[in-house]
Image (cartoon, rainbow, N blue to C red; front, side, top):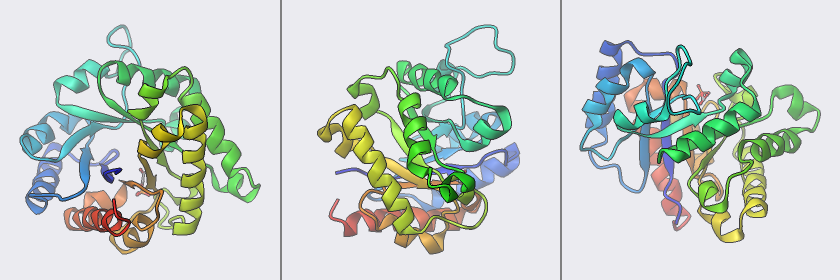
Length: 259
Ligand code: PGA
């Protein structure tokens, strides 16, 4: 019912030479990805090159961020129509690294979500608690606040087109992933909240992916959970064979759940 989605978030990695080699290796290793949607998010500078490499294949292209507006006096920013022109179908928004390093606010992220939807792109709204928030028992409070603010003002149809990513900050780039049970608990909570914000039917269609130290050797267990609809992969997406293994495990996980 929900096709799993595996996104490679290359972050600030990949010169053109490196990006071409990685995208080519992923493309050649995944000639016919079965039962999974795969999207690569290289840095802006490599989008055009990777777009050419994956053109005509089932592998999609995504960006790691964008501005809310379609054009204007915003030095250094990239607008949704520019991404559409390059063949992007998806944009990561509200990644914790941007929230933390650049002070991105829920309000800015909300405007970006609406902005990318207006241009037919799929927003991937990232939410997640810090280690301190988890220790203080504030996981659900934080995730709820980020979701309500990030999705504010959107109608059910818009939320249905949005992908949600649960990425506990303490698990990102640390090698310490959330356990399948920890992730499943929050994914179930997120789906419940989407149901409250929209309807039960829409909540059943929204994909909620997990991110935070996903690797080939923990993907099976995470992807086997009913409410985990794929992965947002950072570090492990920089290695083609490791990333491909994660894609295959996501497909197997969904198949074993009867989806
Ligand atoms: P990681 O990053 O897989 O390196 O933990 C995930 C992310 O930040 O999207």
